[in-house]
Image 1: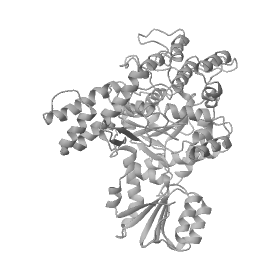
Image 2 (image 1 turned 180 degrees about the horizontal axis):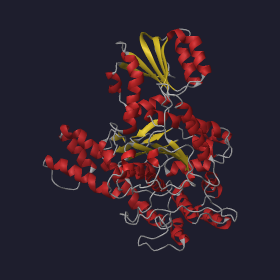
Image 3 (image 1 turned 30 degrees about the vertical axis):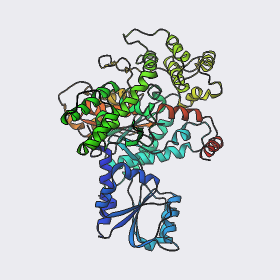
Image 4 (image 1 turned 45 degrees about the vertical axis):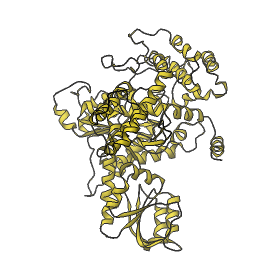
Length: 598
């Protein structure tokens, strides 16, 4: 399984940057300045370190939009998005008084002719290289990418949106650059929905743009389809997974702990403040992130005890303060212990939340859908839940947070496929959100039934039987996307529900597919598909639990790598806030944002 920054998307992106930008600049022995905009700063930060850049003779990294001192003897590399704002900032560096000896210009994506001509006519004599490298996505993890655009949710789903089509166009361009970076020309399919057209629209845009991109390759020959398949779905295809309390380490931490920009901040008992980045550079994080919190809580103290035993420490309960004392006494073990201290603290905080409230909430949630008491529809013993309301009411009467109660109400509504106006009003009164009912009502904008209607019929998808896989009673729900991944790998996706927009590669046709959960001997079809990729794009945000599924299916199948992506990664709280804001006009949203920054 791909894991860590030495594998997967991050490695591919860094290699692509080295093969284009860095290779061009190696021709000159002069040290250079690298100038980035906010997006390319995130892109480079995700796949390399400053030491990697220094090794390539890049001595300074600067912000395109900040005031910079001229360095006339140095050449500057501009890596930026092809926008009017970036181009104007570039022109400002050279038009009146040049800041640098020359410019090497690299755009993440296609540069419109008007911007190109403006640069050529006004600063052409300073430009040594001008290239578009087709890379306008962020490699978040080894098998996860985003388009770095949380605002796309509002643009696509708000009834007041005026930029829906342009947003879908931009997302399509970004998906095409992902395919180009992977050197894949996939067959494109989408999840057909009776009441939503976004997946179809985006799939058509991507398919057309891919055909145009691969019209001619470097040898003037038309590129054929590769052994890859791209599936596009809408967020409403599984409303349960983003709302449910998850107990795998990464999903639980991002749901319950205030982690900003992947940075976990915490205090030791001596009052000192610490912070740690939760990225794939931390191999312990990579090892633990998809495990159940029960396993993580048992595993980290064992690791610490192994270290303490090696220094003849007494075998006793490990605490954060004792670890701090050990680190002071053993400098050689400081880095190793520091890593484990971070995860001991994070796991402890997760378990504190679990003990306080989350355990009781999980018991209710895992009883309402088959696949979860409120989500699964059966209790821990497998008995069918006849009245989900009986499971819900104790949650509403307990002093949980408003967000937790809203999540429980939503899971109930999803489990019964919509409720009546009268029932919904009672639920809203219980949660005391009479003035904030948009938290619930606005799910209709995603095509999720909230109020039952005689004219609306929604058939729940048939789920795979995972009763033999269930290990923890409070974690019986499996994201719907995992069923999709396994069905796609096994060639079991219904063509009526998942129409093809273009011919599918040979490796994805025919029968004889194997289960993603069973050991098997490689068939001829497996051999054909070895090294193939399944790419899934979720419109409207992807969850950490869905990201985990990509790794689990890749590990189980081995003959196919699953890559997942979206406009952004969401948490239950961020999604609820976005849902509520859908009914606001652009002016209202602008005013709120202005106040928050005032």
